[in-house]
Image 1: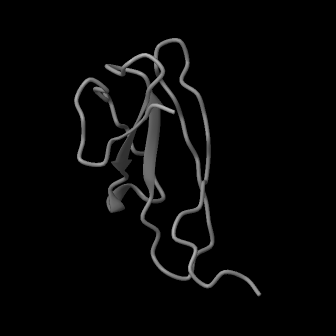
Image 2: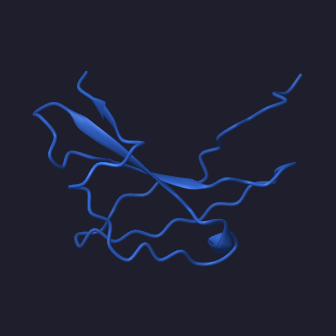
Length: 86
């Protein structure tokens, strides 16, 4: 029997180029409306051995189109940032 509720599907995984740019593409057949977000794993302002994960919501108006984040400052923390020092 399959899972009834599947809250988050990983749609793509990429690494930045030498300038920090990246392109993602994702597609999923869902019963309800999707709520896409981008997670960026980085070590900016992290203690040695630690990694930050910053989460950014993709605006609903950009679903099915192009979302240009333009410039993302990983120096500033968001309310959805996580730190892993394992």
